[in-house]
Image (cartoon, rainbow, N blue to C red; front, top):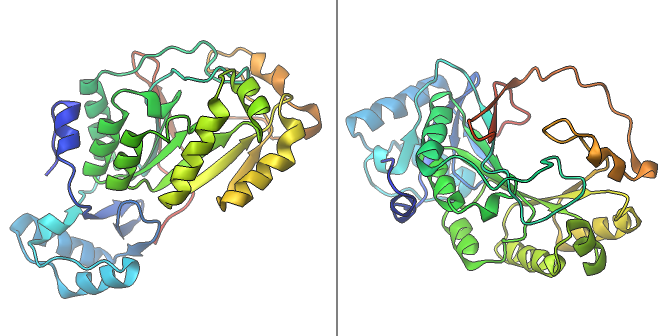
Length: 321
């Protein structure tokens, strides 16, 4: 059952994790939200689950075995519809989407692509409509980002609703609010498929100067500690600018100390309004040559009336078959 209504009603309806059976491009996948591994299903098995779900049939024996082998999950002896959310095929054929839930941030980095930060986004009704539209378009893998995603007042409800719709939800954040108990509780209840955090320095002096937010480094480290304690699937993006390039090795060492995989980003982009200001913050010795952008062949980008953008992709960088 998918619950709509107020953010509070959606959040209160969160239940134990169900499996998701879904078309994905030319495949059919069986997934457990919050887990990276998945099972590739023959089309006949997907159709079997689809029929059993519609008719209130039982969980088939092969599904019990598959869940045990893939995740060590013991399925209850319940009607299939209580155990597996079977997603319908979409005539549009999209697979992945990235959603900027807001355009505000609690940091004030000079290189931010947002330029002027506006704490705006869709209202709750609009958020529900957009999520349902992405589901109907076939989106299985959803990234929620910002701005800063975790400071959005309705992030938790939107995140829960995405899970209820059968999406594998990734979150991209600066990590400033990861230490807060409501976020801990949310990710314990609904584990993200991936949590990507940006790192702007290896010391309080550098990190706070880059983000122009006093105490930001200490809050970030508290969030990393919480993520490691809860074994969240964190990936770190090391952002290199002229103000923190001297700590590049130390930032990489910090990533390794926590045991989280990382990537290093050294090239800045103009703002979404086309301003070139972020380019001046690049560390010249670390800039990498890159090809000229000629457009994206993977999907379509559109903006809502409040400039909050979404990107739908009909291609996939990685599958979990």
